Length: 270
Image 1 (cartoon, rainbow, N blue to C red):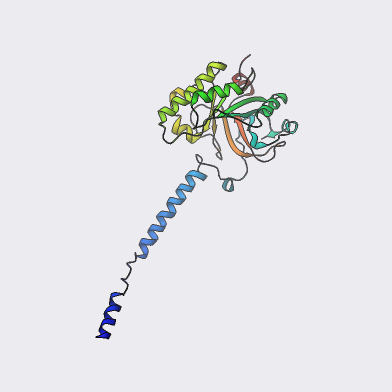
Image 2: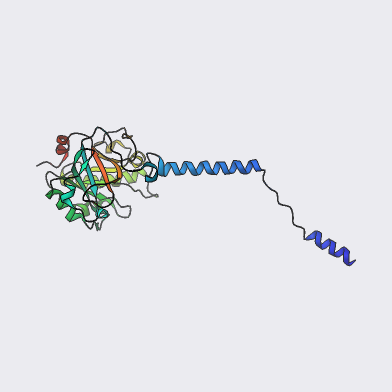
């Protein structure tokens, strides 16, 4: 009787054998996961419309066929040696224009804006100022804040709106209305069309509307031999890993799509 109870107890405590998936099925699942990972990685880090990945592409490349070179800067470039920068050469051409970060949102002024903006003019560059669009402030507040802090004069580039973000809970239509609000307020003040800075991908996704076609475009698109955007554009930010005398670390490099005369004509008139 005791032995029988022990045997019954052993049977009751026997583990139910696990059902294992066939090896081919495991290989199939692993392959699918790997392919999905590679696709996501390529889309965001490698592809020409995604983020840059310097380990793949190396140092900055210079688009051929463009003579008018420029840079954009902010406090991230630190203290700039403007005398050295004045002698800088990009792809055998001098630096002609410098676009300086001025404001962000409705309350932030770039730490180095006032000095950089003054020095750019002092050292003979065509200068510009850009406002970084914030998803945390309304369009009118941002426009009037920019106008209160930035005083462009004849010979400067038109004001620039840097648009890279959109709230996830905001429709494209509402987003475009907000962007147009900023553009119209600033345009009414300076009587010139502001420049829109954005990425190739963001332009196609969020600003693909004919109401923006009259504005000059400054497109960021890295590590491609030629601009992929098929519409009209004025500036191309082709890399963020440029290196120039007078600047420690990397700096964004840009080209202007036209002659030096055309660039001067784009500026705020006398």
